[in-house]
View 1 (tube, rainbow, N blue to C red):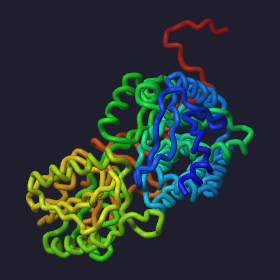
View 2: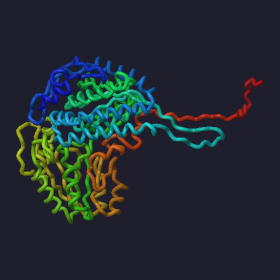
View 3: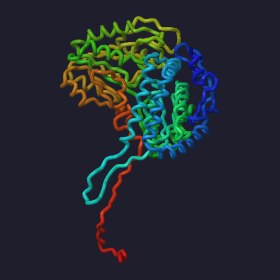
View 4: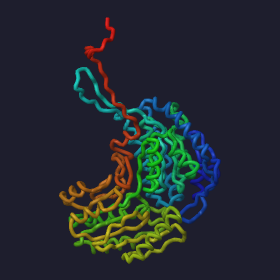
Length: 506
């Protein structure tokens, strides 16, 4: 089956490390091997791009920008509608490839592809609103207003856990705003990027006004590709998703040349489970918030704090849920435990579990049997004492901390007692509790009786503190992909006074 989907996207023997959206080329640097974390099978091998090739792609993106920025916004929206149509036509194949390459259960992979379709449709609706605001002047016959211009080539660096969506959130809004886009995908998921670019090719060739280089990809290592691209002045905006350490390095490099960054980094989401919550609803939401994509989400629920009056019941019912979690068979419908993205990720996860055991933390491991393979790990609940400090760092995998609390003031303090602020949530039917939580939660996203995962397309998505800078997707995020110009237009007919200066008037 993997061979079939690889052939669908020309990946089995002709995987292209670079493309300008129209021409797909092999890389000139070292070879990389792509394996499936599900069973360790080799999917394909190909050569990555060289530094020279990444520079050539940058030049094509620059040339494309000069043309695309002149295309009317409504015509740009038409391309996005075509993109949505083409992704929809390839939805099943794109999802299947994602499952093979990074292990995401097929139904979740299909949901991610659908998110890309929704994002394209959303971005296509932006065109009437890509303008500024009028302001009153203190003078007669003077107009004040904002004008927004396309910014330039946008570099998008994505992580493995959402190999399509993280790119789409940036690329489609950037295209709507009149920019070109260069995509540097995660090293764990290059095949997903190549496949998506094949779909972009199908869409772009249906529009005569789309230039080569509008949407590009380049696959390579840090030295040949990532670092030279980030340091390149051709990119006024770099949007990067990954670890906080990576984000800080990108921010330092781009900031040194006074460029802009959008950084979507780590998370350590808290969920406050209050006595007023609908326990049946909240249990399900909390469980799925923690376990979707085997916990490989920056917005995954990591810290569930439950009021002491219901803590025992919630913990017991969560144990029941974990014990019923089907393992493997990720092509089937329903929530299933899958592998982590690779054996390196599994090793890091198990290292964190070993450290918790050494510290004497009470761990619950469900009674399930794992398939063979180095990328598979057991899920865990770490049950903390009420007075235990908050887990400081993110463990990227199926680990949920559960901790009882006594007072609402106490749990609000614990919610914010970490260095991350991407998403937090509350389960409550008490309006005072809900508003009290929203007033103090130090996170870019705040979920009420809902999954701590990213918000719907129409809302902006971004974090605070060590979770990043800026936002993607909806709201007014589009402004980050454009250059604002403040316009002051004077059409007074009265000549101002000379203030003692002679101008030689006749």
